[in-house]
Length: 93
Length: 93
Image 1 (cartoon, each protein chain N blue to C red):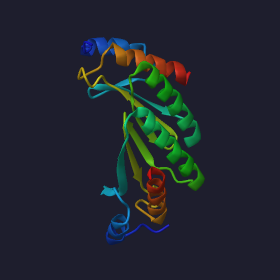
Image 2 (cartoon, helix red, strand yellow; image 1 turned 90 degrees about the horizontal axis):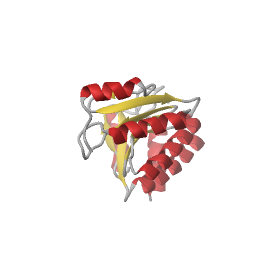
Image 3 (cartoon, rainbow over the protein chains, first blue to last red; image 1 turned 90 degrees about the vertical axis):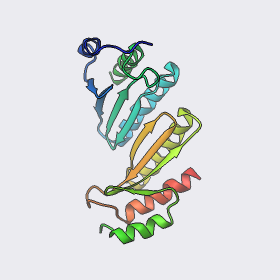
């Protein structure tokens, strides 16, 4: 799948609430009341990632969860990442 | 709780299979056959962390999980971290 150009990524980010570019990836940090709530969110995302067969990098810091998306096989952000970011935002509500 | 000295940390690491010093923390990287197995492990650790009220930093990279422990309130590695690392190793089996 084709890596998006910088301007294509910027365009995609414009409609991806909370997501930012971070190096070659895109990422969003989610904050929850506590660790338990953070883990519930992580498990919902894990299910969606398995369904899509596209897995974000997930960093858990107590009540803060960073989700990062990149298509490692393509070496950058692709439409797969954008779709997964949209799905993650849907789940986050 | 008292921060362990460098030599105390080294002594603790000697009996903590797979754990290494990383900056002010101690960490171990666990590898699994796939993402699903990695998430099952993460959830077991999450339960143990809630029970102990001591939460590792958890980084998930598909089938690789990095667990890092530091007592943020003390500013370094304490016996709480060593105990949690032991518990994580027990769960990893």
